[in-house]
Image (cartoon, rainbow, N blue to C red; front, side, top):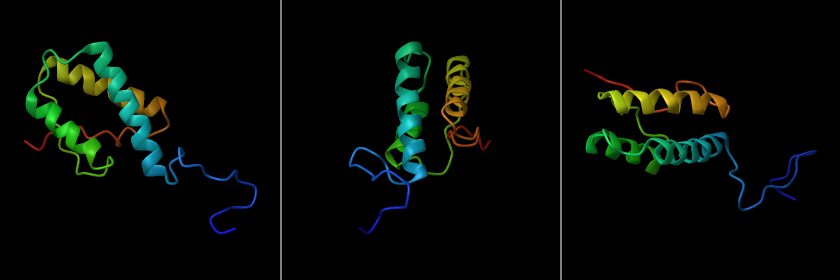
Length: 99
């Protein structure tokens, strides 16, 4: 039985098989919840597009989502807390301003 680890339950199609996939799934769910609670008012098209690209990459793209407005900063801060509560490091979210 290839792919089975002694003592571990078998993986199912619904379960990601590596940690980055698990983190990305958790983060994506938290992002959806954050947007549902806060809405998109005050979020720039660039902020939303760069964040969408991060999620579309499987959460592996270089962090380059720069929160500039008060609403973007509030959402970014909430996402960092939500990510940490979901078992990820605070460095997992893609929020970073290069300039």
